[in-house]
Length: 224
Image (cartoon, rainbow, N blue to C red):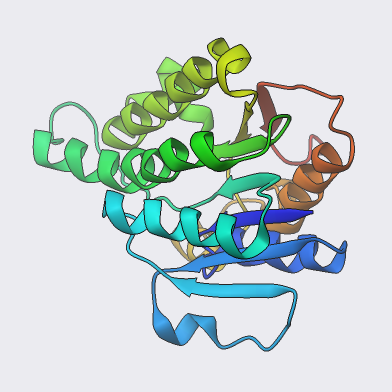
């Protein structure tokens, strides 16, 4: 199975690449930095690409299609986070978050819908605040950009008969990463979802393609 993974050098993306590779998938890994591609695993095809550029994103999808012949799925993990409520969030802040969280996905989604196999799946990364207005208030720009991601998934799924591709949105609460631990040192890390757990969830849906779940919540442990 051939899988495109963007943000392969990120905390979530690297976990997805590692786990899917261990499960026998062939990975077309997209990195934002040349130095992040230093990995000798032959199952991982490494490529540096600026996903802010639509033409660069389209080119890498076409190259994957030419080299691997079939694109079975894509996991698009690139994104960014910012705090801020309506009193201190500028339109520049909002546009920056849209660039990070929506544009980087959309620039890949367009060519993927033209080049993926029918029956394939695109996984996008949502966020809990985008589903909960109370939480959105302190993360306005971030939440608005993630709401666009949910809408994109809805549009893809509404038109599945045309292109044959389904879209699932993984919705984490707080992911257990070093930056999150550093910024929230008093929180209970044991309740946070692990990047590996999200990767395992994605692999489960890849291996059970008859399951179609538009929104997959990954909120971490409920244990007290």
